[in-house]
Amino acid sequence: MCSIQIEPVIETQRLRLRRPRTADAPRVAKLLNDRDLARMTPSVPHPYGLEDAQAYLAQVDDADPDDRAMFVIDHPEQGPIGVVGFDSENGRAEMGCWIGRPFWNLGFATEAAKGALVWAHKDWKRRYVLARHFSDNPASASVLCKSGFLYTGEVRLSPSAARGEAVPSRMMVWLA
Ligand SMILES: CC(C)(COP(=O)(O)OP(=O)(O)OC[C@H]1O[C@@H](n2cnc3c(N)ncnc32)[C@H](O)[C@@H]1OP(=O)(O)O)[C@@H](O)C(=O)NCCC(=O)NCCS
Image (cartoon, rainbow, N blue to C red; front, side, top):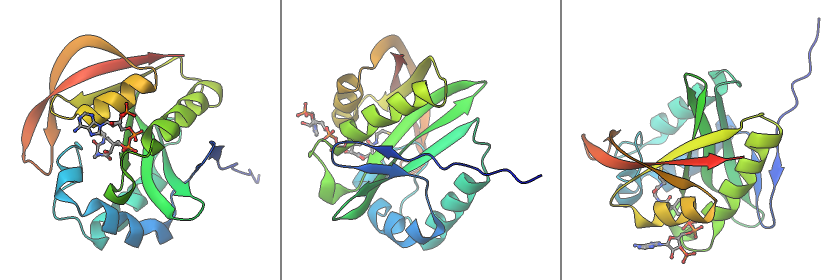
């Protein structure tokens, strides 16, 4: 039997969120090879090369779509500017996001996160989504608050590949 897989695309006011492609690797590698960006994420090492991006994109491609949904954030003139997505553990989806440094503080992460959350509720049928930010990352705190996340009050130690140590992280939840 032949089944057609419909690829989710999310349109926001200025952005298009689409499934990652192998061809995104050079751009992803270029934007992620940034120490200040990497140290605010759990899993991006520093330095970050083309092979890292290729391995990451292959992993995304292989993932079970019920557990993982990643979107490249495409700008109509600039091309890919970042990634937003969800990973699940024990059925609980958690959102993560990064934007390349040349595009910071233009509202793109907030716009992408809001679009992805609508998709997570309407199409992915999630009733809530978790998120966390390192305690020393006020930009991420701002994005998550503006996107409608609330603090749970829990602080967990989360790994940071670029720092090589665990970092206190503030847990948040978004209710559909
Ligand atoms: C966090 C990140 C995703 C924000 O992306 P962005 O597109 O710049 O986000 P937005 O423009 O939507 O919002 C940024 C907000 O942070 C605020 N901000 C930025 N730097 C700040 C700082 N040092 N202190 C306080 N607020 C800060 C901005 O003022 C803005 O808030 P405002 O609109 O209320 O003024 C981006 O900086 C990034 O990718 N950082 C590295 C990776 C990361 O932290 N990912 C998130 C955790 S996994």
